[in-house]
Length: 301
Image (cartoon, one colour):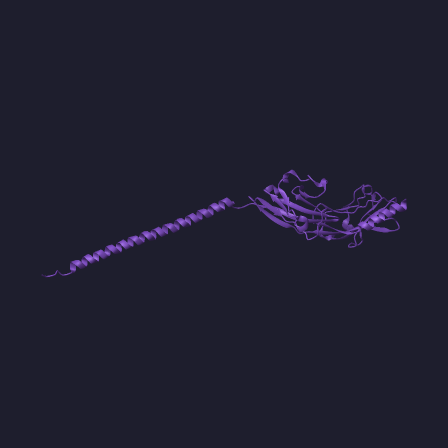
């Protein structure tokens, strides 16, 4: 029976020992590196999280139900944890607190029987420090928070938009799992929308309707694709207008009216001046003709 259980475990390992990608945002509270199996093992296992990018390579060890961290790399001291009931749930995922750029690398989740070590999964952790900034001005009907990937997405892919600052909110969830439905916070209900063909195009941008100042903050776009967990960070900033748009339009209209009135006055003044000049010239010509008649000698009979 023991051999059959161990064979079942090894079969599961061979099917799932694939590399996954997990992306984290530098400074976020924590990131989870997934690792799980669903077969039974009678021996007390030694669960190991290691990374060949660090010396020593021990990231986190669990012997039976107790952590064994005496050989843990100092870089991870106080920053790693596993669920207390990992053996019961078969979830060996590792939680890494406060990820930073120096954590980038490959992490291996393995199972050691005392004689052999079996790799369950390898995760490539990529911690990103960059972010995209979107500015919001008052009066906008909607704003688009960008999120795009070139990776091929399938039907089981789920997309979670959350706000991490100033408080945590579930903004929008796209998933074919019923458990993920109705997770949206009431603050965003009826105001969010994703592209209809997002799995084909990879455009996971979120449209937020009728944004206000209270919508400002840090938004995280998280994509779950098998063992891959990808993240993007978008900061929405509300920019106060120093001069309201309606006042700007009114000021422009007023300036145009003043210019038009000035041009009209100048044209009218020139027109009137022209008429008066013509009248003076006509009068002067008449006076000259009259003087010429008076000076002309009278004809004799």
